[in-house]
Image 1 (tube, rainbow, N blue to C red):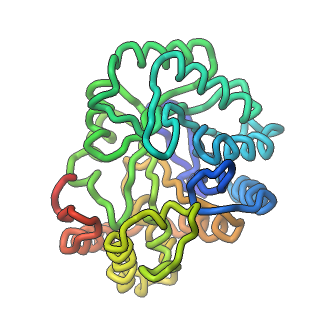
Image 2: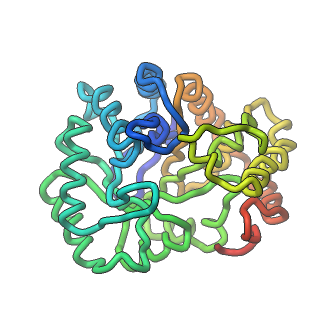
Length: 326
């Protein structure tokens, strides 16, 4: 496993992190990737640590706290050897939000209890609507107060889209961002966010590096997803486009001895501005395959540029041209 610095936070993180939305399961009717087995989830977390993964990204919404509890149970005895990022403010998967100082403080305290820790390494506002977020100064003051109290070590924003990332830096001074980025979603390159993060030393966490699993080759437009799997809620047109993405990029993979997932992860890691990519992992087999992507190293510039050219020539999102910002 290779390691990178998370922007100017001073934290060193594994370049492959553990996206922990999925292990929250369907607890209390939560929507993620469907029901899970806690024993398998704990085995995946432990295997990840054994193979060098030190960065774990979760949220109070994931499984309504269940993801945080599993991470807390697994790492309570070795807390100082892992970097845990959590999020708060997104109340449900219908989009209701509360980023008031009182709620942020309550959210942090609840996460600390479930994580069985007295600090969170990176606390993030969870997908806020930045244009309507309200008093930025008041929110930043609250986060800085939590830093001074030692409850969080650093803070950032998990943004809805790359354009929101620009606002998060400009208006909030965020020094950590979590953004969608993968071979089928290169908007962060097109709107200049990646360059801005590198220039300003903003830690960049890349979520959905496998495009909800579609870049692994395991799913097609005909795959039937369960009622608690968020992919069942996307339109058939969108699922068709995501399914086509893996086929479009597959000719690039065949030139090297690697899986589809490893190509997708290596692509994300080809950009120095990226601190860590956080694929979701439900089983230890997922962990082992993803960790090997770090061992294979970043893609050569020629191959990375070829992937960018393929992206520019195709459309992978409904209603959006690949070469334009959202």
